[in-house]
Each structure stands twice: as C-alpha cells, then as structure tokens.
Image 1: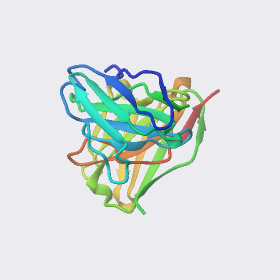
Image 2: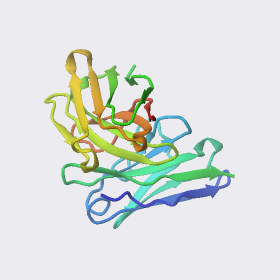
Image 3: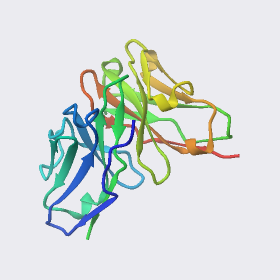
Image 4: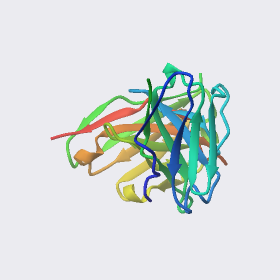
Length: 111
Length: 119
C-alpha cells in the first residue's frame, strides 16, 4: 500500500487561507469517506483535527475544514494563525486486512 | 484524565527485540482498538497494526508481518508492541493510538517512545 500524496510544504500569511491536498487511489480515499487529518507540532504527538472527511472533533477550531472529491481529500485552514504552523498528515482507511495509510505530511509555515 | 502513557526510550542493537508498553487510563480499555504507528526521524507516520483489547485479535500491516507482535493485559489496561529482528531503519518514535469500535480515526495518542537501533 503506497502512502497518500501530499505537498511537502505550504505557506500563508496570518489571516489568509490555505488548502492542503491529499491524493490517494480508488482503493483508499476514493472508496471510503474515512479520511482523517492530524496536526503535529515538533516533538509532539499527532492531534486529530478532522475525521470522516469533514467532521471536527469537539474543541477543534471551526477554522479547520475538510472535503473530498474523487480520490483527493483536502484540508482548509482559514484565518491562519501563528499557532497553526505545524506538520499536517492525512490518513485514510484502506480496507483489505484491514489497513490504514498515511500521507507523507505537509509542513505549514505561517509567514 | 483520559490518556495513554507509554514506556521510556530504548536503545537496542541490530537483531535484538524491543517491547513498548502503552497504559490506558480514564476510559474503558476494552472499548477501543489500540493501534501502533511509527515515525522515523524527520519522516512521516506509518501504520503498523492494531489489537482488539477485548478479544486479543490482531491485524498487522503487511510490511511488519512476522516481525511484530501486539498483545494486551486487560487487568492493567496496557497494550504492548514487540518488534523483533531490529534493523537500523527501525529507529523511530513509536506511538500507540486508540480507535473506538466502529470508527476509523485515531482520537487519542500516546506521547511516543523513541527506539534507537544502533551497534
């Protein structure tokens, strides 16, 4: 199972919006509405930000939103803040066995 | 509070085995799968497998089949991940993370355990 494809880095200024893409295949992202997104600050454990494609856990800012089209999922962060600077990972359930697959991660820089 | 507490860092020689523990507290241990995810230095996340604490049933990623063993002790709400025949590229932070039965996302993570494999 290959990793999902994410851009290595994205950047934006405070107050702007950015979108991180996550491209998989018809065996994972395309087959299930089960993409989740995680935020990871340096030296810390990942934190769940979005689940089942577009749902936010309690306590996560509504500046974070998720969507999916075909084999590509996306995470959008609006109103960028300095504290959003972190690595972001997408993850999809991939069926067969069962199996989960992660993206390679995207480093978000807030300029 | 609800948390997963992992065991401390380990240094192992190539060919050895390592066993990492993950103690759950603040919730019903048998109500959630426990998954293991690793992250090599400067790299992304990699799913290793999961255990059903209720039944002890396991599912492993193909890459780790034959080298990983996941177990649990329900009396102390602790899950274990043992990786054998260690290689230098097994150097990584190993995380435990829970998934509620019927869900497919990791809603609680441990802080991670650094395993260094070096001669």
